[in-house]
Image 1 (cartoon, one colour):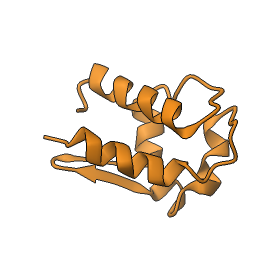
Image 2 (cartoon, rainbow, N blue to C red):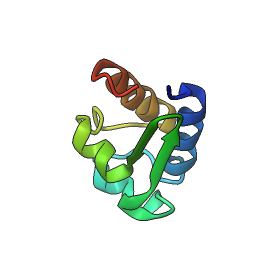
Image 3 (tube, one colour):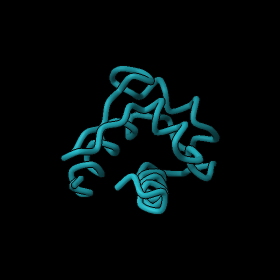
Image 4 (tube, one colour):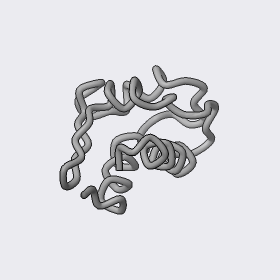
Length: 83
């Protein structure tokens, strides 16, 4: 089972370098340490940024800050049974 606090910290670390506000997922890519291949892992959960974008709506853009983006991504992962 994934540790949501650990996953949240990974997502924030990866996306906090984006130039907020962001109006779409492509604006997040330059902030990712390994681009779309950046991997988020916790317990049995493992997903790249690209997979995250395809297995969720990618978020409800625009976002003014990283916390709102991560909150929405985690909520959607929970709703889709990924967490």
